[in-house]
Length: 140
Image 1 (cartoon, rainbow, N blue to C red):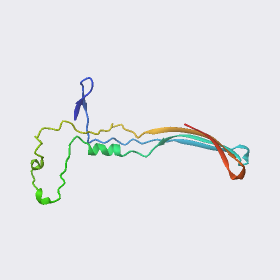
Image 2 (image 1 turned 180 degrees about the vertical axis):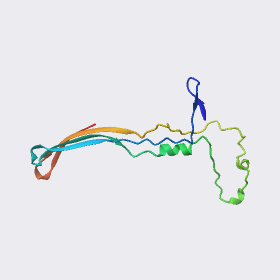
Image 3 (image 1 turned 60 degrees about the vertical axis):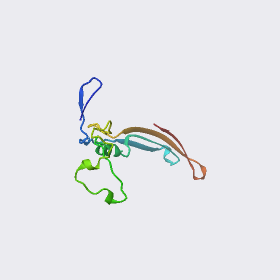
Image 4 (image 1 turned 120 degrees about the vertical axis):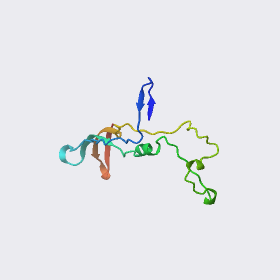
């Protein structure tokens, strides 16, 4: 399909071309340090790039919303609508054969990558009486 951008130049889109494979790199680093070696106070933290669960619906919408409208008829009895190989026989009486005034189109950038997020944290854990542990954390 060809559309025009804001300057009037043609832009070509293909709803049949799904995005290519883009490998995601998610390095992570973490540490845990036992202060004094007595297992009562520890400092821990880490940093890394995380990718959430991919939203595959974004890709599947491209397959379902190609710009070609679809419709259906629900009938309680098939005797009211016998099969006819001519598609024009199924057009409602209000359809004139003119193209639809609007349609839905879902496209995905060919270089699309799933979102990634850089997270960092640092914390200190302190053993408290009665088997409790107190924690102070900083998260980004």
